[in-house]
Image (cartoon, rainbow, N blue to C red; front, side, top):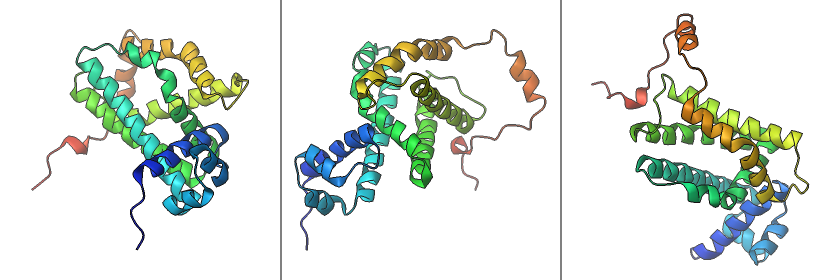
Length: 222
């Protein structure tokens, strides 16, 4: 019977894989990941069984870090704390951003599942923001979360297509450029809105069916 894997080694391999996948894509070899982690390729397989399993665990870790970062920002804003430190340390999230980009570029069922999970998670932390009194509720929370995630990812992909970095592996440079070109309009739109009237929404609602109810907040029927 095999002993339980050492968590420190396993986490070191996983973190090295996240960064290598973010820089080189999911075609990166097990050998390159092992070199980054300071272990042998055999030890990578010993801990994860296959590169696909390692990829799956990296997905889980990146999604968990995104959830934690989003919920942490919501809690800080809702409690009146400053979030300036998050802007100052934005480059710490560069591997996550690079990893998400590689998932978009990779396509296929695995990438689709990853993006769908991002959207599902966005429903959760947006609901957290609504409950904290920080975010306005929506008549269709899942649809709003999907739009926000896909529009943000689409904008990021277009920015990189129109203004590709000199070194695609320089994840920090990608984050800096994104912050320079996009953070202000994003925050301004989220904070102040866009229209000065709700007339367009009111008129649109006359021509569509009633929006679906948020069953997650309803009590179970007897």
